[in-house]
Image 1 (cartoon, rainbow over the protein chains, first blue to last red):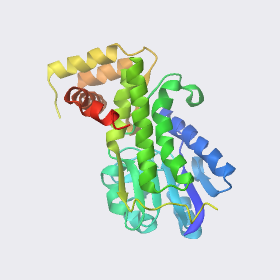
Image 2: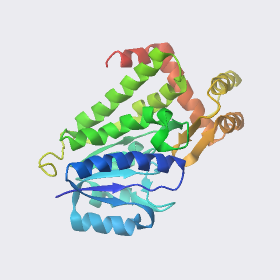
Image 3: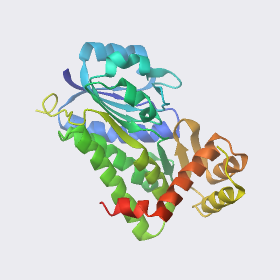
Length: 212
Length: 74
């Protein structure tokens, strides 16, 4: 597989604008590390383009953001990017999908030698300001989800990355409970904490393939 | 899934004490204000059911000790 990262991040409503912003923070880190990547956004984010990129460039790591279901993840508004029938394109790759429900079926079924981290529940978060760059309430949930990619980019295995993210969620839940307010954020964190799943070979990492 | 009047009331009380400006993003369903969450819980529509599920999962974890046990593993 090729030493590059594929990122998809639609941005057409509140939820996708927030997760796209947080994916952007990861992209800054990818750039600073000098890792090759392709960031699909907007009208470019359709199955035809992304599948073509996968076949040509053969990236090991996929960071997928956007709305999902048990069977498929969306690209640009309302279009299907990957469904279970695309297993042949995905089965040996490392995938982190920040999306609803994909962990319930899609993640289990598409993985062979690769690894899938995602959620088998709706991915939930509260917002406060409506501006992702300045929303402390949303950050309690979205920063821990970024920990999956942060850990992978440091060369950790998928299992370690999954656990680092869960550690960050526990840390934020503890902090909020000790402070004694914002219980509603803890509820959303608990939802995502229990719903974050990993399938496939958790020893996969990008250490030898992408990091230099 | 249906839920009792008591559960519905409990969830609505918990929503009512949230800050007025916050909204809940529930993936494909959208992003909802307090008023919209309360209306959905009342109607028992898909959004209301997700809000109730999330809150009841949390309350069960809190009362069973599962939440504290999990957080003590930090």
